[in-house]
Image 1 (cartoon, rainbow, N blue to C red):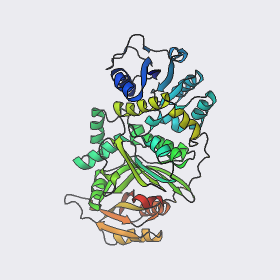
Image 2 (image 1 turned 30 degrees about the vertical axis):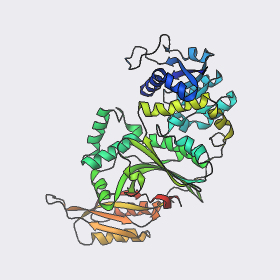
Image 3 (image 1 turned 120 degrees about the vertical axis):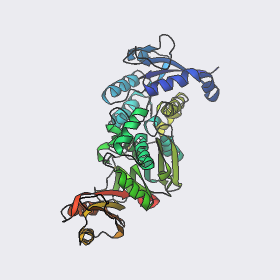
Image 4 (image 1 turned 30 degrees about the horizontal axis):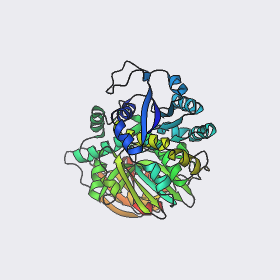
Length: 440
């Protein structure tokens, strides 16, 4: 007879409903695959009258989490309400009630990891959190256990499906950021308030979690250098395509001799790298390890069912005891690892793309080259386009790509260019990802 495992869910939104659907509709299949009878005993939601697509058994839905916590037959609590303060309160209560916890809450795990994980250890319970990063992709498990033989030197990921969808549509359909965002909201790929996605915060949350596991050091969220996609323009995406690049919001953790570097920024990826081929609302992660070399992970990074896939995996892992053993034995969580040492801001080295608006007057290109040369920046290519035929201002775009250079030098050169006679506006600067050599 299969072991019966009682499950409680906190939060009944898109992901909560997807988890409930699998537990209810696929119960027999799950039992056949795992030898476990996963029984949904409680679902807690604030609004009990809201129409939902999943019909629950009688007496499962309530607004009172205490019912769930006091039920001795509920062994695992799944937290899917999101946010920080309320989720933290409920997770601590579940742990103190003797429940193991499964969570998809990247904001909480990125902002209060030591507090949450140490609370689980104090209670003698475990926390499983595969669904907090990259949806259905088993990246936490892969890095923590599958690549345990490796010293991870770099992780580069497309971790936000909304941003990837927007950048893909802009380039493929030749339409503006504002137009694509409106369409993404209509299709459900973007929230009514998409700020956390498009300003890079969501990717930063996920990077802080993943980097802590990958480098086995505690990575603080406020040390992630973050830039979103709100200022990306279609003409830069098109110029990048002509140069052989595709723009991605890339979340990167790089290990260097002088410290760790954590960044989230729009980045040009060479077309031949597998990250460049990741389109629409998909996620992907490149991991560079000392033994494995380059490992690549790809899949749906958001949505109810893809995220529920990872949640169910964590439920099963917790039920059979694997999650507890991993939690206790693998010392790779932020409450048991030292704080990371960080590379000084601006020391990162990469090639860069620049677009400078320049009045079509003699000497302009020379002044741009001089500004770059003053910072020791070597030009790889430089192109001056003709002004549009209907342009009254005669402002032409000058496209420059550089050889590898420190970001601080590029920033100084860009600041200097804004003072050059004939330069209109602030030059656009986008780093270029070079793959494995980026980790060196």
